[in-house]
Length: 333
Ligand code: UT7
Image 1: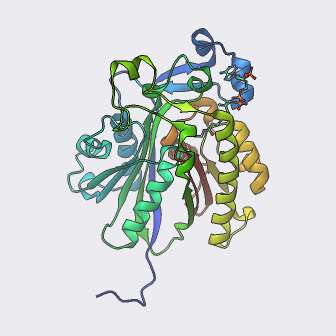
Image 2 (image 1 turned 90 degrees about the vertical axis):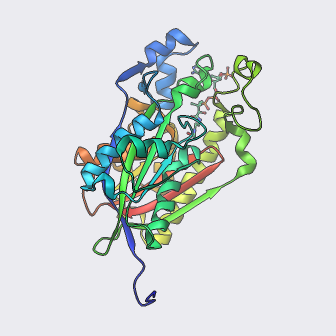
């Protein structure tokens, strides 16, 4: 029987992990591939280099590596994992899900597994979904992974997009807690009417693969960059402010902001608008570019491991991506 005097369970991040491929692709190399320059890329995006997965390395391989590290950090045995959610726009294949492939790679035989599709917002959507599953009491823990191999869906002849993306994966283990504030608030949204501005047109049921769709580069990312930029700044700012209000906190309470890593100018605009200086914002897009669902968990894991983020710190995640989708989350690490 449910005792309604019980406080709803809080959910915290018990451990983090990440993985990026070894191969570095520099701006200088991109200069040899398309009509661009290191100066333009650095000035317009802040990016210097990004990682590219091996041909035989897929999203599930990177996700499993990040997941393994997060389980070790959380001290959770693989056979105890209840739930695996993988946020990805670049699944290994249409099915089985990437989460099932991660489960197999890890040997997490007792876990329920599924993928979640919300492009660059996928990790935050997956965190919120896992939080609800844990708060229901039906699941005791969750391994939440963001993994994307964007190099597999990049048009390497389109200078407007090919300079932006990189490959990688990040993961967290979520557990219930009674001693810790954990996730304090989430605000998220979507606007499907603007989906055309950032998409991969072919490869699904609308436009199945044909020789023509391949020749026509329809299986790669199409983006109206400038338009996406404006929506990203507005939605992430509004979501960030709303999540802070909902948590009963102000910008001054936030120790670290971890934003989606799409463009340094977007991050700077958010910094000004939410009134949190750049020295409290975790940035790694100079080294990794935009790794889609992996940006936030990779940045989180790096900042935890190098000691910038400590237990008790209040964090603000803000994300935006194709769909359109967006969101913000306030939590105590
Ligand atoms: O992860 C999901 C969310 N994604 C984002 O938030 C991405 C948001 N968008 C952006 O980050 C930026 O819009 C870009 C970095 C993609 C582009 O920067 P921009 O300042 O918006 O440039 P633009 O698209 O307005 O293009 C300005 C000029 C154009 O030339 P003209 O038409 O003015 O002659 C482009 O053709 O820059 C040109 N251009 C380039 N030049 C050199 C576009 N890409 C390049 C390039 N190298 N790689």
